[in-house]
Length: 216
Ligand SMILES: *Cc1c(COP(=O)(O)O)cnc(C)c1O
Image (cartoon, rainbow, N blue to C red; front, side, top):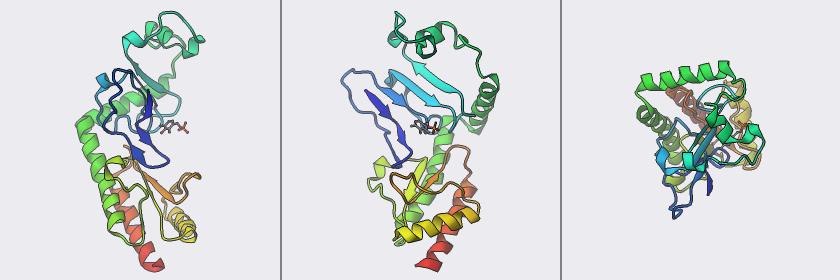
């Protein structure tokens, strides 16, 4: 069964895995790998593009159970995890620079105190913003079920589409880039990936408060 542990568009996440009655779970963990703790043993396979929490685009991490590696080649070599595993991920020339940066990021997470600390830090950042949105009668978050909320991507809207457009324009001028929501859902979206600092959340809340008081 395939799941996506964090949905960047809707701002939702799966923290408790479904009971699949033994069917292996394959997860796209691109947007919350290294941000939230999962038990690796509970997955048949995890894959994640590095570009959000690990390092530069161009590297993909794959963690796969040995027994799920194919015995007979069925796909071309670039798509065949068995070939990659047998070659210790060095079947082709690897993107050494991107992998080196990923190593520095892994060391940075370890220095912070590991994944538990990283997760605490992410919870703190996202709760600052969720709490502010929830107490506001100007902004609202479409994800009402608290247990489904993403720690990484926080969508929100103002009372009107016109004010949403104005918000995105003014936010951009204040240095809050790419805060427009995905085109399929509209509104705004704050993405708080691992590299995004707590101070940035406080600055955003500050800006949201002043926008609210001017436009209410
Ligand atoms: C970001 C992301 C991708 C990859 O999208 P890019 O546009 O290549 O960055 C794939 N899956 C998930 C779950 C993602 O969050």
